[in-house]
Length: 191
Image 1 (spheres, rainbow, N blue to C red):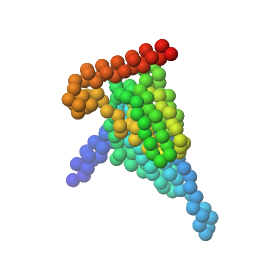
Image 2: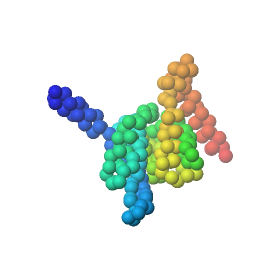
Image 3: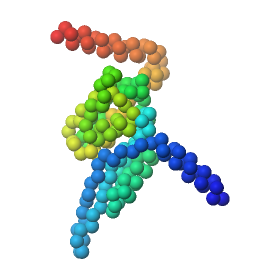
Image 4: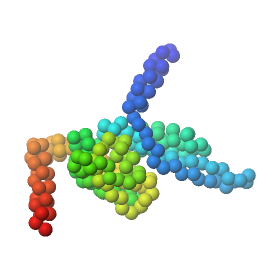
């Protein structure tokens, strides 16, 4: 009977080994009690496979390693898949909000790199994005920034899904996007 559980544990380890995790923020909180102060820790962790899947989690415990472990487990339970263009950037620009935190994400040409701050950068690194420009507006709270980034990423769609929904060919959708950007460039040159 012990053999199947060992195989199951080995399969779980193989599946978990493909994911990498990054500690975004750790917060120490104190509870004042009769004998003094009791300290606890809250951790925010982002997990991803760097191939288009990413998740975040929050964990609280009396010790830092336990809080990180809980946050990592929560992040693995809440993974989302994000379609990437050419495996390196987003398909289109998007905005996300959570509370007073707002994040604007823009796709970028090759060689741009990840232009994003702190918590948003961690999400893109774990997602596997190589070229993106992000701007955080409003709240600088790491929890709100990560949730706003995930809100923006959930709105990402690939051209194939859009074409299927609208009953058009993928080439029509992508050609329009190229035409739109060339018109913007033409007006930018004229000004």
